[in-house]
Length: 333
Image (tube, rainbow, N blue to C red; front, side, top):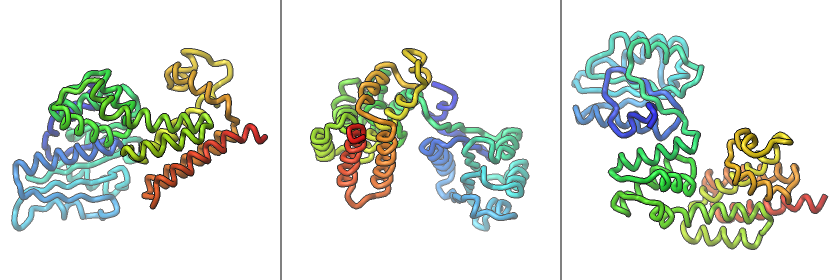
């Protein structure tokens, strides 16, 4: 497990100044939550002040960190600290040189070059740093699942963890929810069979089968699989995610450099060879214009489903039909 995950299985130590760096929202929220929980374990009356840059003005830091007439501890959380600006950054750094007793200041910075002066300044002042980088690689998500299971008191093999990632997807919140459900339902020892029983039959087979059928132009079967998936409780967001992944795969492989083969192509695209072979077979029924149209369709469906469409099932059925139609553009041209 990498250093970025070191805090994951243990509480974040409470120090006067804490710098949380990264844009993985679940990890950021947990890091801040651990600080608050630890402080409230010391003082149950701890006041939490959670602010964005727009809620701050010169002098406000000093006001917020001043001792209360009634005493008591405080946790001051500064969100999106990269947007504080020059004056407020200077004010935070000035405060960090002489922090107030019983006050914990947590600066949350998304990472990157913007607002780097704050990160550099707090680092020089020996602020406690917690890294919450975006989890982008499959291996990192597998590590997350295994760490999450340990945090919950369970245990999962590497193969089962990878199966869970394949079934549920890349969203860490959904993966964390799946881990919690598995530990609660199995008693904590999770193998590949348990993952298959609870998730693979629903997310991997249902969502990705719908996508495959649509991409291959099999409208009737795609709609049948879609209705079955929804009837058995698969979240619409998982299905639209599978559709999006399928269509993006077409665009990725279709746009690959000509002449690239085997391991070189797999490295170029960041996809396993077996998946590239499968997508290449699916591409035989598509044109570039059709893929472009399908990309627009899944983007619209994603917005409708995640935006709380009144009837997500209808939005998904419409998307499936439009993807099949986009594929048929080849025959019409």
